[in-house]
Image 1 (cartoon, one colour):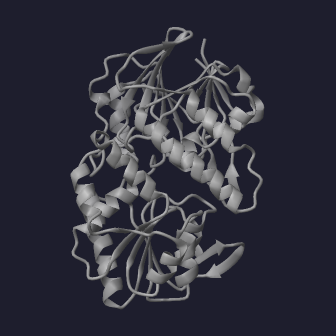
Image 2 (image 1 turned 135 degrees about the vertical axis):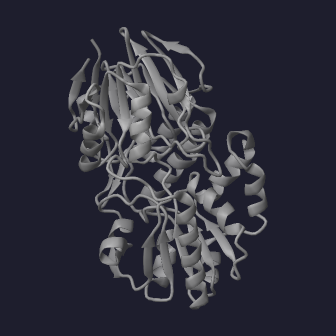
Image 3 (image 1 turned 90 degrees about the vertical axis):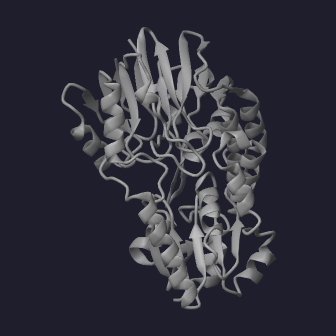
Length: 423
């Protein structure tokens, strides 16, 4: 019998962390909310007993809890792809930097990040490996460069943990294809359900509307703030916007600069590395805080982290320009409940330096998601035909909607936080 406990990402998006047989972890992330960083239920297991961690990708909602776990005794192999390790290093170092700037005492130190990185063992896609009583294989998930779904065999059971998946090919990644090729019978599929209750708009249409919104803003004499996720989204937007012949300069700010440089240093890990290099002949890096102040005095397009307006230089741009109705804030991804991005959409407000600002800018959200939509999720699940489907990494409504849409021959489960499922 195999036990699977959901220490996070149950009826919520964020803090993915799943405990298998009390000794293996699938991801170890944090959740960004209005209360700050929320960690998995780490009081329900002993990190010292963990024998291996399997990382699906680098985003902090899948990796951000690792230093805290190390602080509490985690000392084991952490399996991931080469790109996941490189990007995780950037994100974790930035995360602790933000905590220190916000005068919050981090629960861990830079030493814990260093140790976590030293534990990481690089895995190639489709490489069959073994750890203790578990064998495993990483499969390209198509979400961001280096992202993986993880196929596990333990106690005679085959478990597929999707992590975050995307079936569409983008400017940087190929859509996942393994569901069309996998021959093993899946006993349990743990599937992300971020968009389990809805489909995405057609990407080409989204891009057209996004570009038009920028043109309209520029024509009115306004400036454009584009909050974006630093990994993959920012680089896609850099390529897209560099090809539009705008009459104002385009800038890239925040952690996205380091990620861009990392992608280019491992150019075989992304699509269109040449297009990204070409784009950087047009898009300028913001070099300092003073540079940020100077460029916002003139018209420009500011691509900047973070995507949920939860931290990073985007807060400076909004602080400088929140009172300008000509300025547009164009959100480009999912906005979690309680984050500034959601507040901007619902209340035209943002909290910066502890102060609530009434934002007069034009605000619009565009669906540039790197997650599979409802229709694609159903197609993947139907193709794989698991005996049991566990829907996680989605709001309660999204998980329930996806579970309800699955053919009746597949047993579906929507776990609650902390719940243990035995198979």
